[in-house]
Image (cartoon, rainbow, N blue to C red; front, side, top):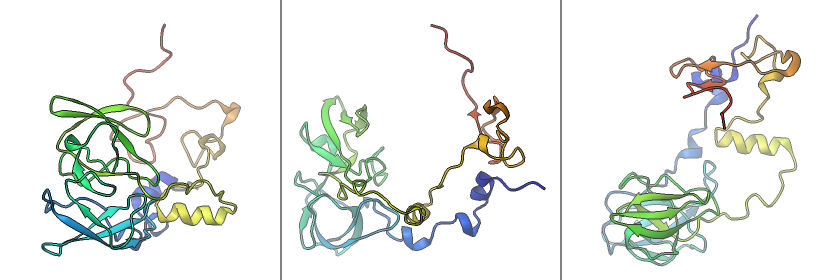
Length: 235
């Protein structure tokens, strides 16, 4: 009798593949009520299971509004940060920053709350300006253009060195990945039975060529997902 594929079970959202809500109770992102010159105080540093970096709880001095942001390296409770500043931990538009400034929690589009460079110990670098856009070098060394009105936090994300200590037990790794809703360990498809995966049995260890449609269900969405072309590239 057939067995439900792992990707089918994850898509269904059963209790085995559901993240605990408290792992993502804290949502670090920029709020709309941030004006240039506003002063924020670091109220608390929170260890969030769903994030690789600690999260800072900040309070606006004027209206008392709270928002959460990923902590910069060297941030501590009681420190005051400024919206529009250039010091470590300040939130500013990338168009107002000098070349060579290290930034993290970068917005992909203005006012989206911060989407890029959010993992612990990472940072991007402001390279230059082209009209109304800024050239940012991402941690992958790729340079990309962003709107000058996109916001980012000055500095480097806290939590550097988290990968230096080896994880000695499989159980510890299991709980870490489960908290972040990551699939671990990953089993090779050709090592499965034929009934458990479209690539299963591995007879001769030759992966079957399969082109899956974009709208195919999770159990069939394996292999090449609607590729533009197939076959070897002619030189």
